[in-house]
Amino acid sequence: MTVDYWRRPLSVVLAVLLAGLIVSVQVMLFRSYGETERTTATFDLGANVTTVLASVQRETNMMAVEIERLPRTNSLAKVRLRRAFLNQQLLVLEPTERSYPSLRGSLADIRATVAVLDGRLANVGRRAPGGPAPTAGGDHRRPRAHGQGPVRRAGA
Image 1: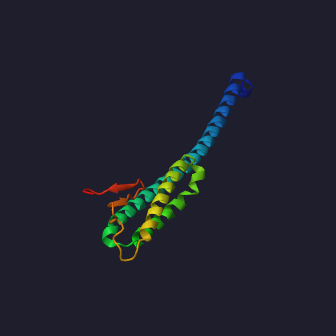
Image 2: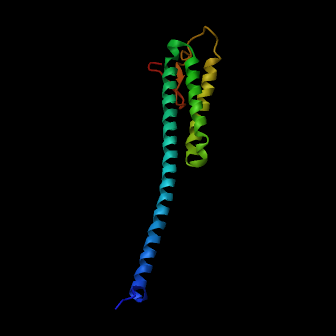
Image 3: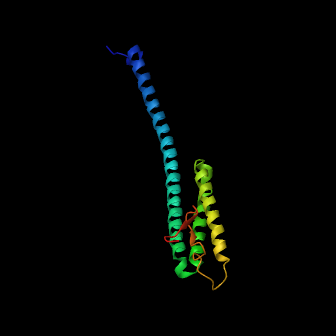
């Protein structure tokens, strides 16, 4: 006596459940790949932004070192070079602003600070040749590298 398994209701129900399970697992895997791709893209963008911001910080620090050396070197060449490098890093960040709206405020603050620094560097560059060092003014004040205003020297 032969038993036809496909005519039994339990076999049909189990076959349908098995097919549904296989399809649902495939759909979950497909969605997971999509999530992984989005996560990877977001991580890649975040890593690039973090790297460029670290480069902005490095260039700012190196420019600060050159500004501190101004009284001894009396040359703005290295400061201007560091300023150009800083500008290049800021240009690299511009396309990223569209992807990271929260970055706009920080970049606006950086640009405002750099604009203040540019104004002060322009004033230092306009002093008379052979005159006193840029920081040896009457009130012994000098600009800070990060643009937060002048700092009084000790004993002034």
